[in-house]
Length: 329
Image 1 (cartoon, rainbow, N blue to C red):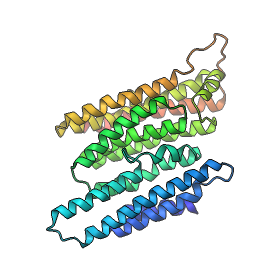
Image 2 (spheres, one colour):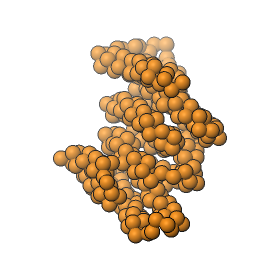
Image 3 (cartoon, rainbow, N blue to C red):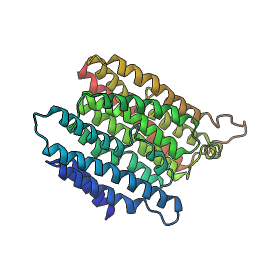
Image 4 (cartoon, rainbow, N blue to C red):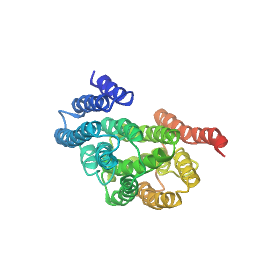
């Protein structure tokens, strides 16, 4: 029931004809997610739920205040309109966990289940992103958030050993790319978001099924057979945007569109800071690459199926999307 109301809240927000209706949808979404986050077998989930509630409530209050003030201001008073738009965007950035309003995101996801992490990192970004698209204006706040999200997402994740926090900082880095895509084309943003969601689903489902939470646990999984290592390597490299995997294409299209719009400095910054995230993913994969000669390769039916599915989805869909994007050139 709570899952349905959570999805309904998102649908209400993105299809709303007024900002007040969008705000109501956001609140329905937030209140529906909180019971799903609470796990009575995990005390940390209660702390994460409270943190999530406090941050989201503060952002909602700022958003509501800005919306009401915006509606009461005259259309000729551009200074006040820009002032209230600034706070509306600030609240939306906080809700999605973009830097420098990101501090709550790693702390919240570290205490919840992998299923909830997938929802927070993907589904919960839909409404703030779309509302930001409606209120978007090329301003310094947007540029600052993109640069800081790319920098902090790549740099802060380097010293993490908690896989949940690593996924959170990875999400912050990807927010910068999604916001950059949002600036230039809604279709580019949709493609990026769908690919990011698909990669996260494959990676998080594998982490959940293997009950992994920390980096040192990867060595135990890798020691069993090499197939698990290949599955993780494909997913992490795809998340890092390395060709020919699925995650490369949306970043390539984003850079292409930024270049068309003469935003070379933005594409350069994104590429440089994303190299830090790519190093983070490669470091994860090479934490346990030293294998004994006696290591066996045990291919269970599950491993075979999941490996083939992961590889085929990353490569075949990537080539399909390249073919579909050829008319752009």
